[in-house]
Length: 83
Image (cartoon, rainbow, N blue to C red; front, side):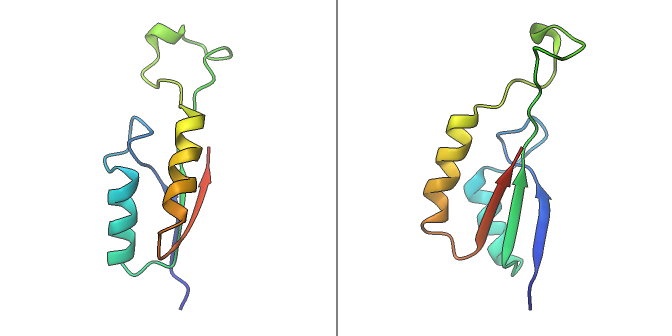
């Protein structure tokens, strides 16, 4: 059976509580076969608030993609990422 969760956040987003590793471990324990991590990315150049006032810091896209490229190599489930 195909079991997936297609809207997850990690500590790359201000509202995420689990590290990527913890999220994958929990997903495996829940017997999911596929997950999609969808972190928040506020584009402060276009935001209504100045960058120093936004509660959502910019996403480090390079670190985000590199982390999941590495984790995909050993993960027993399929990992998709988005922003």
